Image (cartoon, rainbow, N blue to C red; front, side, top):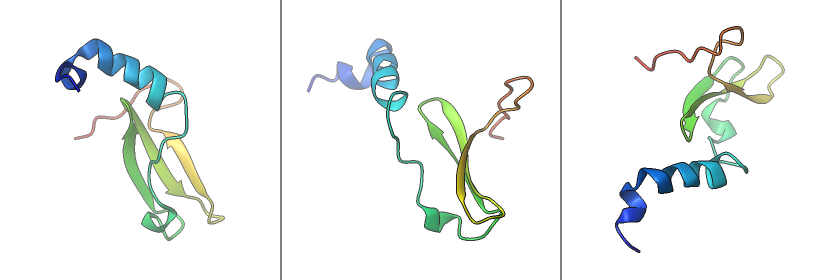
Length: 76
């Protein structure tokens, strides 16, 4: 495979669109958040997401942003 595949920004954008934003993407395993209130923060492409176990014990995935301003918190 040509090295450009790993460095070309256009190829990266195309991969984000065709792979990461169109189908199922592994973000974590339920065992990583065993108790209600436990959470993990990760990314799907450039989008920050939160995997959390809710009060009923169900695993939920949330976009990591403020809903009224679409603000994404700083990772620092």
